[in-house]
Image 1 (cartoon, rainbow, N blue to C red):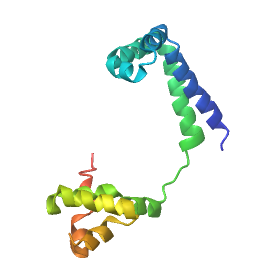
Image 2 (image 1 turned 90 degrees about the horizontal axis):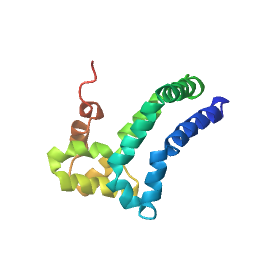
Image 3 (image 1 turned 45 degrees about the vertical axis):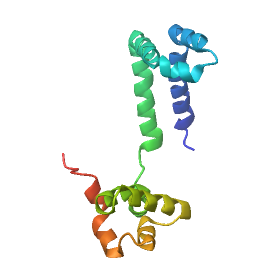
Amino acid sequence: MKNGKPILITAIELFVVLILTNPSVKQFKVYVGSDSYKGLRRYKNFFIFSIYENVNENKKMFAAIGSNGCVSFNDKCAAGIEPIAANIKEHVDNSLMLVTALNTKIGYYKAAEIAQKAHKEGTTLKDMAVKLGYVKPEEFDQWVVPGNMVGDLKQ
């Protein structure tokens, strides 16, 4: 653990406490009482407005806490992190979400069945699709290309 993490966690906790100690949020918690799930859904807009008002009244303090927290996170946690391309490729290639590329080829229900069974049995989409007989290995390789699924990355 690097030295900056406890400070960062404290800054985030302070930010949350500032929001939760807002008088309007306290009244909201008292009003909702034991029916908190329904209350949160029912009064979501009020809750969001209360947070907005709290932040709006204390802009400078929230800005300082937020910006200092982001800078600290970057300096103490994120700076120097390098991606491991082999791990990224492995996770992308084994992602169950790739099954969406098969929807237009074999249909939604068959694609969903492949994903569910692959997840349940701990195997890859390709292995399960071939095992179920819905696609041939070369068809799977042709249809399921992660790079083709993300669209144009050029800006």
